[in-house]
Length: 311
Ligand code: ZN
Image (tube, rainbow, N blue to C red; front, side):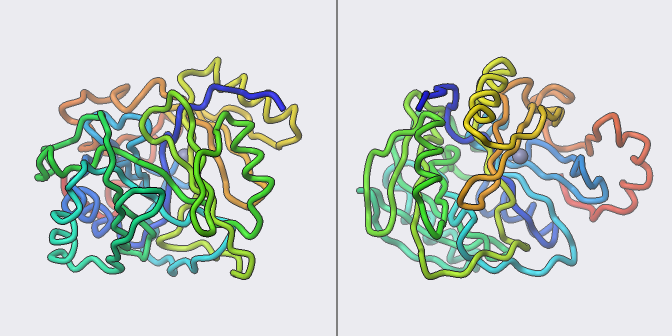
């Protein structure tokens, strides 16, 4: 198998939420991330698309949400992303245990895997998250009220929960990942020369029912490529291997292609270019409602309809 060697780690993870204001408060206040874009779902513009990350929304730091006010909670299972894992500095977990406990966050549980200390916790809709202590050179966004010794650096990894890991493991290797470690029921893959969000943990759960998507579920997971030329090479390589990949779609802040993986998880490959500062300056990212040109005529209606969220 050819190694396509263009993937640089995760780009973003996109999930479903219930309340937009609750989602916004959790990410900007409890986790101290920066909201780097407030826009709408380009395919369903009556729903927000909210992006949270570091100062500029660097690829590998960006957690994004589609909040649907009346959506039912998802049911965890196989065929989905299990946990989205953020990186924090070594020694930061006691701070986070206290902070998340004080905020009433549910599902707190500490453990260790792959030689790393982890703190699992749930998002407001039951989302599966963890913090991992790691040596990580990425800059933190500290204006969210969490100092540099503790603040989130970006994604560390994501876990895929699968009934059978075989075909997905092959796919990850094809995408340039290498298997680097094993733990009970899980295999760790890493991409060399990554952007920091370098790991994918593949869990095998042969006796678990398929997930039912809803609030708190990951909708898709996106991998980073530097530019459009690299994306086209990846797309061609995937299609030559038999994957059905969408055409390149302009998402205003990156270009995207999507394909369904053998284990059921929806993968995206997204470009690092042009980035979130393409339509507002870095100092004011995420404050104004930004609409893609195809939905610009809906502004007045959307500004009345969408749940207000604070800047
Ligand atoms: Zn996406």
